[in-house]
Length: 246
Image (cartoon, rainbow, N blue to C red; front, side, top):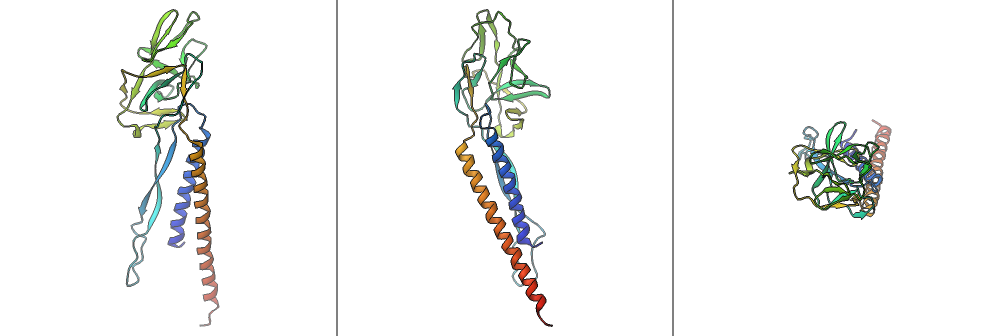
């Protein structure tokens, strides 16, 4: 296969990967606390793909490579739910702490609920961690309220304080599922700003993602047409040369 087609193929593969990322963002536009992704590309110079047979040698060939998926941590909109055990963090870099089956995880999704055992859990059923461990309620707990510092109280008294952490490098966090993150060396946040009875929405902008999808579709179609033209040109050249008389 010619070098031009190989270069075009790498670009097509990168565009398909970007379309997958965009589609996943749109699928989670209504997922509370979801943080959008964006695929970043980089130039990959093939060290051996070059032509030195002519007087002026060509440059080394540059291919397209999808490098990393960059996470966008800008906050989503905060809406009131009327559920007293829901919570939203009113900043850009802090996370609730969750006890998942795979270990400690972190989330911005404060769409919590109380399960049948009286424990505060996520929608997946994972226990939400307080400063002193899991947060447990009884049938006598009425008038539940979450204060700005994360303290949960009821008419019966204090229940516990939500555990909130942050990280030095948010870019190093890895996603697990749609709203959980994996990270090392969490830093406790002592002055967390918590809004009870509210949740943070996804930070996905439908308009932006749709425009990206259209852009990727057009680029892919244009590239496919260019590759077809290159292939047709080569086919015609072979046919023409094959008809020449020696």
